[in-house]
Image: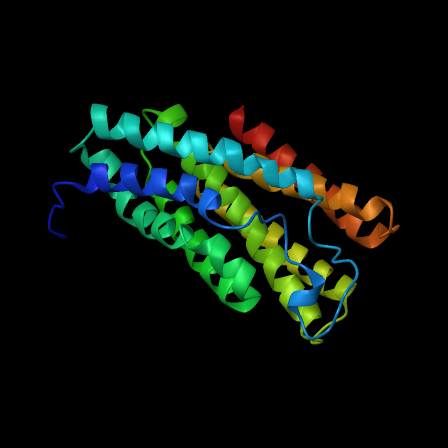
Length: 236
């Protein structure tokens, strides 16, 4: 049994707040830029349209509110503590992610894999009694990170000439959908998780309309329908 960390709840709340304000200390980030890579690609099919990144505002507010509420109402609740350790690791790395993304796409992509993994673990460990405060804030965060890992990897693959942009996008989108469906099967009640992934897929569809990336659009549409149907059936 792991030793109890008496200030774990407070540490998560403070780290969530630092994570939320970290964009104010760095340059804005709305996706990687072509000039960051040796192979200049004009358009990455897997990257959502810029305004979809506005979901971070909801994620920041919800995570901070949740962690503060949990620290006040459930400071030593084992049901909460089970998710706090992995969430603390994810948020701690996330404080430096935007700076890393502006500096090195490879470093940032590696970091977001770790962030996503620990966020998913935190979501799976989150207790059921308070879904609004305990499960779904982390679920929204984990879902967006799940999509972001696929986006980042596809950009790396094409930006370094390993795959052409569309095959890289299709391969990574398949991976994102597979992971999403698997995680859904482990925590079907965490509805914010699939919602975040669907939001990202909608952004990818909109980004691909002007370039007529029909294969990517079709795959995203299939993914939205599959994830959405599974979410509805889980709720019932």
